Image (cartoon, rainbow, N blue to C red):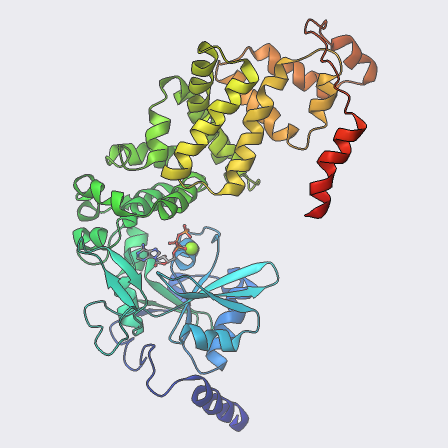
Length: 464
Ligand code: ATP
Ligand code: MG
């Protein structure tokens, strides 16, 4: 007991700086409703090992620590949380000192990633109000003329932290040791009533961070919560302020939306709220492809089914689908201009990926997969000689084949072509031989490399 007490005192004096930047916890909870486990019925065993260890270790070191945000909300809704976020009164540096395997990340919003095996737990320090940032270093908080928050690193106490969160359902703090929920904004009642409600004045909150409009639409579609009237009403009028958000952040948010398991509902809701036009380049491009609507619908449905069945989803594949009709249009254009099929396809791919590189900020690792999937498509039309054998061995064959099936299903290609490839993959050697089409294409002439050329081209590579 004494040892524990000493450890507490020792730890807190060692870890907490004198003029503590993080919240002076004190009476910050006094305005919160305390909801016991008998009422909320969250089973502590459903927390991840990482979430439990993080809160326990921080508390042992003398800090406050709670599971917060989406995880508490999801547990109340009897859903399995995607991941666990922790809120604490320790500063990022103090958190880092408690956990050997951790690192501070982010600029706009600094937080700590704590690693436990495969699991990463996100730990953020209680945020304070932007209006009362006296005594804080300049640069910790930054607000644009439009009201948009550019940097959010002003620390505060728990009550202030709760006000800074977006929805009442996302401002619940669960303490795994007492098993109590601290509820500052009636979030538990809202969840029970099936309502998603913005904390504070929705217009101000959307101006501070326009991405909250996308979060409102995504979370209500995903969780089956109805948007509260005042939360919903200003969205179409404020849609324009999304234009100020950096492309990379919009992209991250769109990715979350597409991989939520409720992509179709979310996209429909985005349109209903006037958030699709001129604001989200990805949606703009998608909606601008009349021929592609069915294809996109199938791709999103496919993705939703996989997410809900806990199967892995490849963002590269998804983006390849969402942009396919854009590529198809450009491909046809270049062919009409007299380019041959394959070079025309590559020109089209470059054109579409160049536009999106600037407007959509799709990450390179996804766009590389996209290009491979697209680039393999013409090879499915070659069903003679040795070609099908080569294609089926290609490392990206499976994704490209799934993509082909989508093209067939959407009516772009005859169903027979997809079926042929399905049969070919399942056939034995003899059956495969019998399936091959007569070779009508001229044989490729093999170019022989002269010895001297080989030496000449190899030389610089060896120097590198
Ligand atoms: P998901 O199920 O998609 O993870 P989430 O609500 O947990 O939903 P995160 O992005 O993981 O979303 O954010 C964790 C928590 O941080 C939220 O629950 C909310 O309290 C807070 N938060 C996240 N984004 C914002 C924002 N733009 N403005 C205010 N608070 C936010
Ligand atoms: Mg989350």
